[in-house]
Image (tube, rainbow, N blue to C red; front, side, top):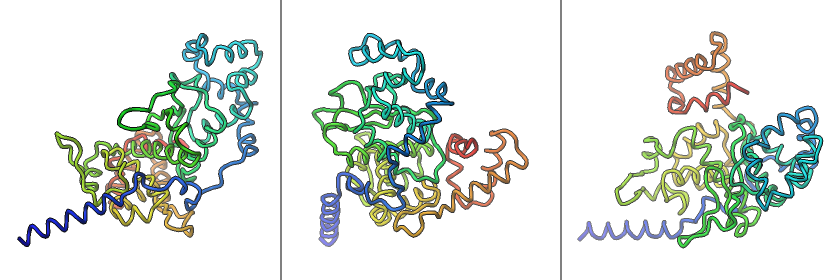
Length: 352
């Protein structure tokens, strides 16, 4: 009888927690109040950033924003036919870009995202992509701006597009705003305000940050989260979840936990101190966002940079550097999970 009563209380406790759990790890409005955020760049700042790429580096910009095999496949498409016909009359690549993107501002913002963050939004470089408008582009820049400035540039011309199919993302089981590829679907544009768009994008960036540790399939992440790959579907420990959406599977758990760390860190630390510590050390390199007093404190980044500096004294190739760094990490055992990171992670530091 006593055991039955204890089980009943446990059931009630878990039920209350599930009921109280929000759909997402943070409210969309938190994108405006996140600690240690830099101000979203103004149009003038973006113009200044893009100017060299439209002058002395125009060949590099054009080659990344316009891929011949994609461009040729769009010549007869209704959404692009007129733009491409106008571009083909241009004598310069700057003129071509302006015709293809319909405005100087869209060209400049595309260049800003491409060269500052390594994110390629061009429909002329990515198949099945639509041209973004200025409002959509501003929401993307707002979401990307949440990435901490101390991280190295993690991507090179990574796909970030609005899918060209106008109704994709709607289904009988609900709406899909975007995916980790990163493709933005119709509900992202129609159902979300600017803050919601920015949050959704940052969530997808979280998937890509999680990639460096392969969190979808890593046993250490499953253990922290209580995940079990059950024949009937994923099972989990509800005490470790930051949102209802994060309960879907280990991948969504990772992306939502990363979003929580950036936008609702107190919640993550309360729900799962283990996840909080992992994301602090291995995703954000020691940077914390509980308050605004430690915005320049990145101890793990400093640790890695010291290892790299020391390794460069004896190594010339990246392979040698990575082996040297991993050996030192293993020896001192301060951040052992770096040994599970993909080599791509270290290469982002080595190629800066």
